[in-house]
Length: 424
Image (cartoon, rainbow, N blue to C red; front, side, top):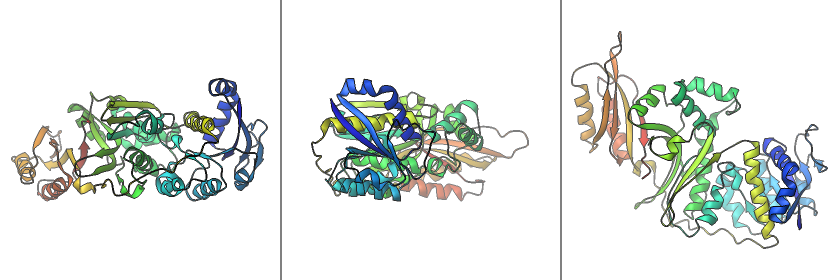
């Protein structure tokens, strides 16, 4: 039996989840892995006397963790970016292996941190909570070339869109409920604007396509402009709207984008609801594989943290090799160059010939219509929505077409545009 002494940085929900799992399952872990995990020291800027540290020493100085020669491995769970980055960097420089759940740090600084070989760094818990997606990409599917990695990787957005789909709730009401239930922060900006999902996609993209982590490469849209009307029209057309992170290798380069997306109801991802996450991976040998489960929460994330701890503990004192990337191997496409089908909701005056003018404007840019809905206006209203699904077209052409359609005098208000993916 190998004893591994842990130092935990932070004492929030995930850190408490780690302590709880060890309190309940320490013997089970030891039996299965041959590793006796012991939390030796906990450091946090804010003491929490009500949390049971199971005999571990407490400190308000994070540096005490990597300065302690008795500690074999450091777990970073303090959150944020700058302080966490400095802490991880210092711990690695001190020769301490680090396990982190910090997606923002890996997305922004992972290249720097992984280029040093003083000690290993693991970050399974940084993406999709309890889902072992990083292990799947790095180990389970290591013999494959990846075609795309597509995921519902933010539980807050998925909960809101599910509530809008199933309850007919408006966006603001669904967000308020998510906040009441603890699924959304008081300031939900990182979630609903797509930033959280983009951090995670930057990590998945880098691992799947052997490229550097680069958050700036990701095109980002949130879900704040999705309306109940869009949800309803998508449903009539046979689709659900999900907030997806998508990395796809094409003949011209690599697509890297986060945005609301119509996907067919028949697609498994369309049935992943509430706060669950899911990642669909398509590779040359294994084909389509999908991974689903809780994407957040103390226990789920703590499970992924301990998976990294145990996996790394089984390898010690073996040294990692630095991560190999080729920054020039794949060009990340600007959003203007990607190709997609589109959902359009165009508010227009209820006048004869309007649909024909819209169709002509699209046709002048080489855009074909796949399906359309045009309903009679309600009593007392003189506006009607023209809803169109297009065939696949380059984004730049769609943008030009939308400028032309928007300029039509019959068009009243902003056009809603959402990309469509069949994930074939």
